[in-house]
Each structure stands twice: as C-alpha cells, then as structure tokens.
Image (cartoon, rainbow, N blue to C red; front, side):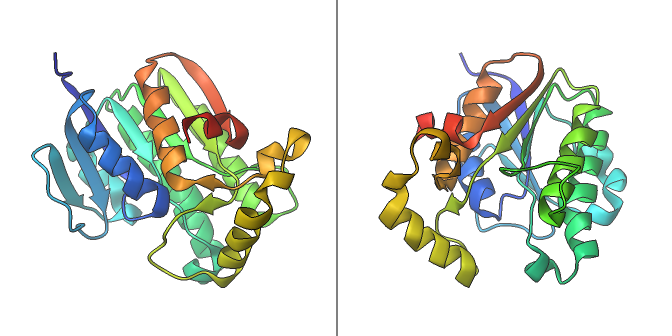
Length: 220
C-alpha cells in the first residue's frame, strides 16, 4: 500500500541533499516530494514538485510548504558565503525559519543536517552556529526532531574545495586508523547520511534524536 505522506526537502542541490532527493523519490513512504530552492533542478519525476523560493522571505511561501516530513540539507561554507554574516544567514537563519514555517503547518518530523562538533558555546564559529541552530530547532513543536552530525562528507561536489579534497584523499588512504574513540572522525559518504535520514523518518518516533557520524555509518 502506497503511503499518502508528503516530504519537503530544502537544499537538494547540495551533496547530501542530492542523494536525499533521489531516495525520497524512490521511497514508497511518500507519494509527493516538494523540493524548494533558489532555482529549479534538472530532475523530473511524477512525485516531484519543485518550488522556487526566496529564503529571505520564506513566510511568503508558507501555504506551499505543507508536508509531513521536512528534510533540511541547507548549508554553505564561510568561503562560499563570503562572510561570517552570510554564513550565519544560510546555516542558522534559513534553517530555523524553515523549521518555524513548517512547524506552523503541523509538520510531524524535522530532519536536519548539522555537523560533528556542533556546540553553541564553541569558540569555533562554524561549530557555534551549528550548535545554535540545533538548539533553536529543538525548541519547535515537531513530534520528532532528528539532528544528523556527520564528519567530513565524501562525494562528488559540483564545486571544487581544495581543503576538503585533500582531507578526502587522506581519509580514503588512512581511514583504517580511525577506530575506537576516533571512529566518530572517520569520513562518511554523503549518500550514507541521506540513507540515515530516510531510515530515521521511517521510525515515526518522537522527541529529539541526535545521530552521530559513527552511528550513521551502519547505512554505508
């Protein structure tokens, strides 16, 4: 029996989001998948509805953002964003606003990609912003909030990032060293994170659940 659930995904043009979108379209759990972004993607599917939105004024689109499960894969880097302020806008403001708008329409689950080391009290700006985002999302009235904290993401990005590419080469060559207490730092495939998100949604549980990188590796 095909489920009548609707999924909404933000950030489907990204590394994790691209894999997540494909899994959602393939899943019998959903008969409709809404993908929102600043531009449409070259993807067509009978289930798929693409919406071009202005993330700075997301509330204007609120009547189109009605779904059961919300997958948030939004994220950038300070280098790509151009400043700390712009980074915070994407990784905090856009994420939290999406959560507020969709929770206001009674979405049941919010599943968001954060990062290993997220901590609102961190002296590292990136980790601080991620931690503050997590705290804000946890406070919203979803039945379940799932927070995914991956280590270094592996996969084919649209843009080239020298530092991440160097780290990826290192991880692939010496990943076997990351065992025991170091296992949480082992790099993880973006598709594995996407699979973990869908599997978490399928549980239809409740509360706030944090999914660390080493736990998600089981879906590799």
